[in-house]
Image (tube, rainbow, N blue to C red; front, side):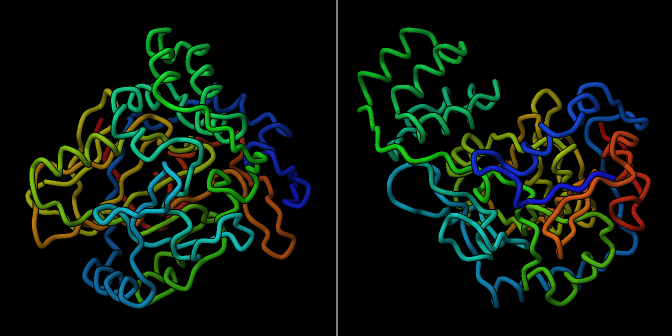
Length: 351
């Protein structure tokens, strides 16, 4: 099995993108089809003590804090009061000065004004849909705002009229910085050190059942939805993509819900309300969003988001990633359904 030492990864690449360049993993990503059909999978967990898990989760927030998702635009750091939680893993070499229990809950992006997102909601949604958003942010950071707009024009993300409007509306902020990807927020595999919060109380039992190396994991909570208008605003701004499940395989456990108000919506697949005590798995590279149907007061929806590396195992002593026996042999979702990721779960295919 091949072994990749993190120290050899250049700073302009994330670890998983660097390893991608050293292997034939893309061949399998492009061609491998799971033996289990479906697009979103619901997994029942008969060994889960949901009451104990909820009690431990409340204790974790009390002991280690609650962090809202960080505002991704502007020159000031702000955090959401509605959507947040706590990081279960961290990166000791993280390039941002952020507490370890907040590291997987957003990061600042430069060279775009704070109101850019709110005044261009349609553009933001289209960038996510076309998978151009992350490249756009990086170019703004590296080369300046107007070159970011030019990138969107060249990629048919916007037409010339929109490009001209953006250039005339927003100044060309060129306070650029070196592009450091390794140990940044997008370096998913470098969030691999288990935080104390993840080991607290009943949460430790989930770690013991997990068979693969854990990466970007968190407790995610949605709260303070005081009006239907507020709910609509949140739903508009939560569309996003994550890494493919070949790189970051997420199992999303619902701890609580009320009247099916909370769930996940996946592009072209519609909405799936969360059932407490059930895990959900889908390809997170597809645009998706957590949603709330309407206002709900005095209630917080909490999910345990367990993210693992399906085809590489982490060697902490050597700070290295090693290809495992599933590499190129078994689709990540089949690994989940066969119990190769988390012990003792049963599944249903919902779509």
